[in-house]
Length: 188
Picture 1 (cartoon, rainbow, N blue to C red):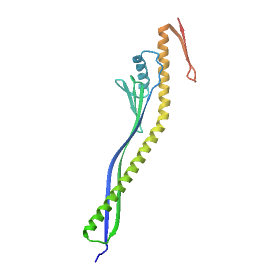
Picture 2 (cartoon, helix red, strand yellow; picture 1 turned 90 degrees about the horizontal axis):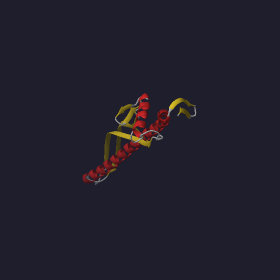
Picture 3 (spheres, rainbow, N blue to C red; picture 1 turned 90 degrees about the vertical axis):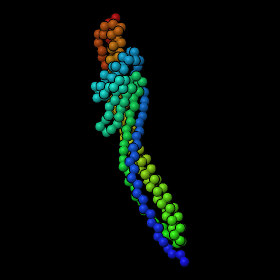
Picture 4 (tube, helix red, strand yellow; picture 1 turned 120 degrees about the vertical axis):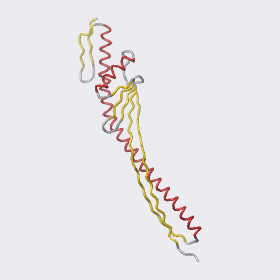
């Protein structure tokens, strides 16, 4: 005679996950002076914006955790953001078995495998949600950063043009307008 047996399985999972997203893009500077000199001028502008120079790289970590790194030799900017999270999930399932003890172990094993698979799926979904959140935060930051870097590159370009003009003759005046146009008057 078979009797009904309730099989109950309970599993918990705790994982610490780290997600990271980043982007790298070229800096667009006109080749006015030799690359080493242009890199020095840009580095000076970046240091004025709070970047720390270490060799050929200027870097800064924003208050929100965004890491900005500018390779002066390679003329590239890299921006990355990471986040850590401790994820916890628990799940309990039960089913009935009407057979002997050996079948009960098989039913329990199958139920446990289902619970573990569902927990893994939940954690994967939560990790992906965290990754999307990091990507969105990085995208919002890129707009502000692009404006700031464009300004630094613009000022570095004007300084490079002025230096180049000095090589041609005596610079009489340098005028810039709000549109970013620069006029350098040189006496040859």
